[in-house]
Length: 507
Image (cartoon, rainbow, N blue to C red):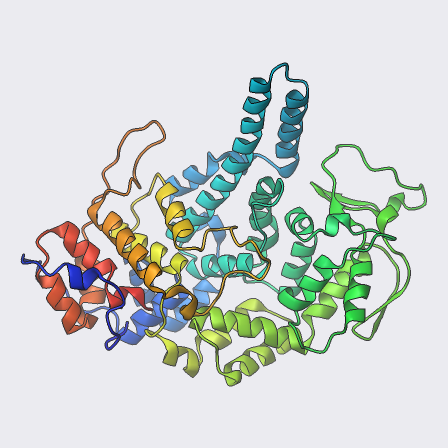
């Protein structure tokens, strides 16, 4: 938590009015370095996180975080909140069937009004699916004890970015996160890469569903090389891109229950899993040379071979390690850190957890703590985790809208490069004004976070002058911020000032 940063928002300058605040009622439980470290590896502290860290210590807490238990440790009420979402029970095939039914009804509709009504129903189906995927992601981010897994799930969704607004991609997004990204967030990179290469959402987004022998589409192959693995300028050639595109032929999507028409001798090579399909009739079975390696034309087996080859490249180890370090440090990392991470990568066959441990225990990482401006996701989630400290939010629409307003909505990046990872991208004056408005909405309790679906208004007034604040934050508040807080004339105003203070904007 910074001690010398200039005030980055209008909040403290605008709200110097008289009034009392409560006195500290508890001692310090975390040192400032430990607090800063904990804030960086989580989506923000709450009482349960602080208590667990205090119980295990930094090393023990990190080891636990590197071995997540998934939804098992979610609060029961939050698990139920996720369980009732339609996306929990449906599959891409189910959604496509609903789309097709509505489309057929629209074609046969008797009037223009009926056609418009059915078109609206199709749009609502896609929007609802995408909105539920956002809700599920945010619920886990807010309440899961496995905070590092949540941070890495977001990182990989950004690294292997898909845009939910393309075509009917919205109905594929929930399965993309659930099946391709989340299970491998702390696993081996090779498995994560393979899962994305077999994901209908990725194959549709980057046009590989149209990539077939005789009609080569290089779009996905190029992005794999430039953005997902080795990085631009790492030594691969245009010929490698072309050969990878040939290897990827036949990877696509099939929503039909029946198998495609395939020659009898190729039928044993057909692969289907939900909406994913490898169609051997569309595959180029010629031999290829990729990154200097001979790839025999074997069909689907080529995918696993090239995924392992790409994951083992030194360029991939350095490129992806640099991206991870930039994400957690919010700045361009020193090459020495990247080199250490890459060595761990090569030694462990791309074990993401081991690579992370190398970063999060490094001197350079510790030196960056407390100095980096939070991105929108980190700012809004940390504000909610501190303000409501485990209380179950029932309406996530305000949080979703805040992310849209701050320019970092989930599944909302139009281009496949993902959102910027450095702090400079998020520190404009416009960002600061919007954050002040968010701080006021949360601090006043008027955001509607606890409203119910039936329209019942819930009370969302937070008490930030609590034991957690005095134990963890108060000892490190600067004189300027302390002076402004001391002059707040209401709890709501005090909340707003804290959440818009420089100390809270940085981690």
